[in-house]
Image 1 (cartoon, rainbow, N blue to C red):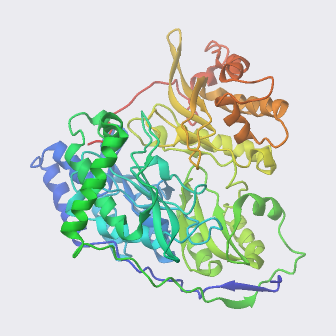
Image 2 (image 1 turned 120 degrees about the vertical axis):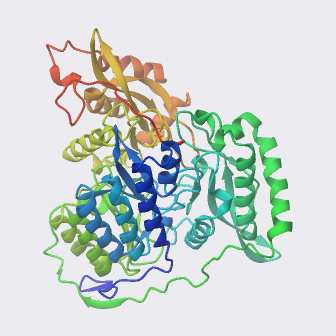
Image 3 (image 1 turned 90 degrees about the vertical axis):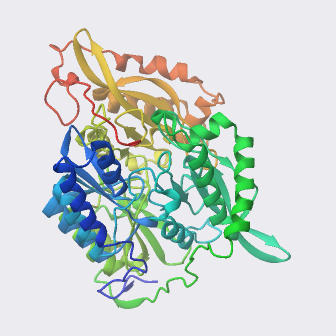
Length: 602
């Protein structure tokens, strides 16, 4: 394919196959808010209702909410992006936030305006229903499903079908706690072992014919205490996918702990019961489900995959006018699809933030450059454009430059995850959101995205121990807290090493507590240690793995060795010597560890 031609879809873009909305829910929400304001509805009952409809509490106030918009499998269409842009301007702060679970969040929405957002979302087929609360949350699917070279088949239709089946389903309207599904294309591009139900596609040859099925993992999850999931059986045929899901939810619904909010996720039930006993219960329950419901309960799987019908036009690039920085951006932001000549592009967002004008521009870009005509949200607070012709990459980069979204390194360590932190969360102790941005800006400045040794590693940051920033499955993980020097407090992060979510999934091991304003220099020091100790074939991720598992063949062999080197970064100066040390990122005032009431288990 030469540079003179390119491929794109018609300007209008594609229309979604599924309408997730019900317009009447907006009116119901508005009426319920009125009852609550008039004192006719108990506050706890209203909180549960609000969460079930996707409106989460906002830090230290009852008058505002965060509206979480569900995007099953991460799919979002151009006209939906444009509607989200308008809503962020009219009712939010002029920007939106892409989460690690493929949702889009609108922050600081006046409670009375939530129903207006719901009504506007319904007009474009979107919903916030069950994006929060004790139900099946947004069903995730790898943004590379369907284009990944390592996948055995595309799981996207199965993820969409699962989302359709459980949305508003009486089976999951009052679970002991939230429940999460994650479909992934392969071991590398997902977190199958870190959710309640994780699924990896697997083909098995039976009687000479290929049969689709899954590796199913149950009982994983991140939080104040995290667990890695267990594989249910060697292979689960596709016809058992729904029965397995229903059986697992029914077991959790019956036996989950509804009294102890700190331990009522399914992973605690699996841990307390023991895996073998839980596994046997699920298999027996599945047999009952199959016998009693198989005739009427089915997954509605779309068996007609979307046809990509390319159109040819003149690119406008002659090979000499490619913008500066293109090669660097292409190296760290694009993924070669299994379909020859096409690429998936990860658009770098700073800690998931995207402005209204950028959302509109992404809508136009997805129409113009994606042959499938829409975008997908990813697992690391980014947005993917898939089916982009290789010849169109320079022009796409130029468009992203114009809107400030051409930062390099989206698929490398320089693109950290940072939860919302103290910008909006009641439970946060630190501004993890801003720290992630500071790291990204500094590492791009240092051109660390061009270092092949750092490409596969990850940095993930949470504002508290609850792991919304997924810190426990990061090469370098951080969660926020408070430190004290005399009577003065300062923001601090617990640092962990060696977490990962691939086929060798493991939780990171605790290292030491690093003050917030020392996280960046301590991280750079750790990279320096790696460079001085690595052996042939080591990259940063693999070297850290060797250290935490006791297999390092270098002067630095253990966590204790690293801890001794980084210990000077933990020392706190006096407030007179360094006033900035005692303020969190994004604040010029003295740090205080203030929290409100969390709603994850409301």
